[in-house]
Image (tube, rainbow, N blue to C red; front, side):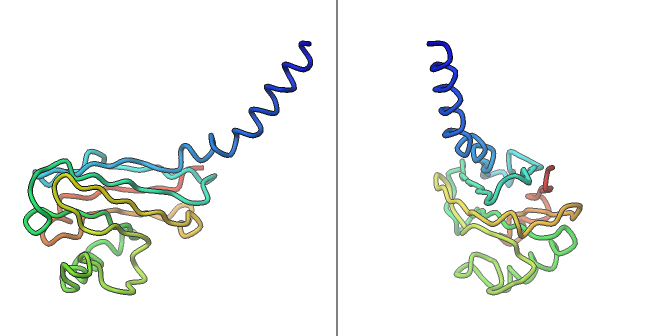
Length: 151
């Protein structure tokens, strides 16, 4: 009987392993009306095939006044991508269409709203410095963080 129990536990673990491995392949981030994210860094496990960022705006102001999004680029590209995003305008979520410097981004949301983005981890290179930021005009100087591919 013990051998059957062990076998059942082993099979259960093997079946659940993909779900457990995927459990670390997402993160929840909050943004507020004070132009703050609740996190400043993200470590993406290299074992993930895809990674999801779930963004929630915990404030009350509408997206036209205090909108937030989450944009990922190489750290060296942050300023240029943010500047070009402002020129792209609100209807493009303040991200230049087709911008190859942008790895992933969410739409702009207002108070009480949520959104998410999923991207392929294969787009990230080990040892590269990545930054994420809000591209709403005037926000990227304060609302930013770092992202690294963890081993």
